[in-house]
Image (cartoon, rainbow over all chains, first blue to last red; front, side, top):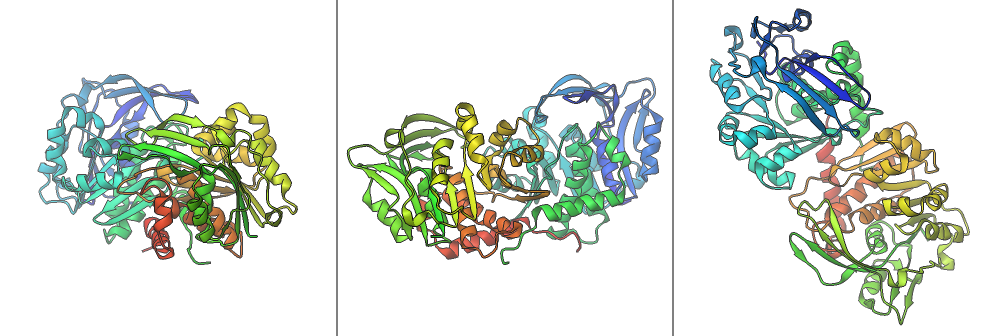
Length: 306
Length: 306
């Protein structure tokens, strides 16, 4: 098994300035698995859903090579549900409904065959739950990446600090990096956060791209300026999934490879936001992805000498 | 004459979380001229100051090769004065004092020998004043660039639209691009603004870099993540001055050269914010600048193939 990932598989109901959806499939785990499936076939997704969750989506994951034996189905219960409304600029949103349902007491169980996975991706969940997944691994993965959010910094900071000690790559946004470090300068924040455990920090900046910090090295990945962002839901998880999928399929895992992995994640995220939910990720081809990655080269390449 | 520039030469009093200054020299014209002087020696600055303005600074400009015969000195009057206080994150500020003084009825007069300048940079001033400078040129410059701000969009939009028709490069920030175009997507905004006249649009995004739009081409210039921003005053003008100075000294003015010019402007702006006012621009060497431009290469270079 190349990659194991844990994260929510859920229902979302989304309102944007362009329209609204009924309950559609969402959740960090769904986006992570779909994104990483572009690069890696041997992956296992660990999650939980209720009896109300559509079997068709689980089948779609399987068709993409995702092992779903770690997705627990709680027959008599309901799937995690989130509903939100984006503001006009799509950069902020209000949460309308959060029904934890099966996620309330989620105790992920890593299937036996996934406990030796080379790579481990911890989607945004409580840091205690994330730690329990790390502890179930029978061999220390080559690389553990973790997503988290300000919510956990507010209510579970000590747990969070305990978990990130075990992590190689922390993936958060700029606001979260500032909150976690207590400083405004992202370069200083990177030093402080890297001293907490992760040797690598990725700071997501949405429409402004992403920063990759490792020792004294910094890489600034651009974001593609899009004609229109239709629905930002899942972009961050898609980014993380693409990043980890690319790394898990790569031979080396040095700084240069990580740069490419970030471009892969950014390219997938740029597709994700073009339609509601997971729709766009389910329809694009490898050729589409390669062309989009090439656009990132065109976008950011310059030569100091003529 | 390679480059003519018009812009305020002024006094600023600045408060940041790191300290405060008495009246120090500032103004768009000062930053533009100092920045472009790193690349071009034959340049003329058109501005106005009062009798209270220090001759020493004008001498410093001359030492950098700036022709100051277009800077009118109004003996019995006072220099434009601005005072502001930056908020903790340095991304926003309150204006405490604005005393227009000599700038209130500024009627720039382009010296005879500057009217055939190859390049013209219009620093942020009222669009009517900017247009009067264009009209004084005896030969249409190869390239006219213009800075402006939301203030003029609020109170002089028709003047602004009239002026930008004559301009090749418009340099504004993301918020201003959204206001001027009426759309949120910067890619769409670029199309709308370019239809107003400028074939090239540069959108400054502060700590998030800058975007260069020309026909179907886009370039994303990163910003260097700095340990500390000390004083952001003048960064935008320094960027514009560096950009135009680089272009004015270059042989070609194609898209590839413009990319390099943007990196030059970004590198100079990254120095500018390290100390109060113009201090840092006055002390760095060409070697410092070259090293900083090289850092931008390191920061943003990646290869899709290993």
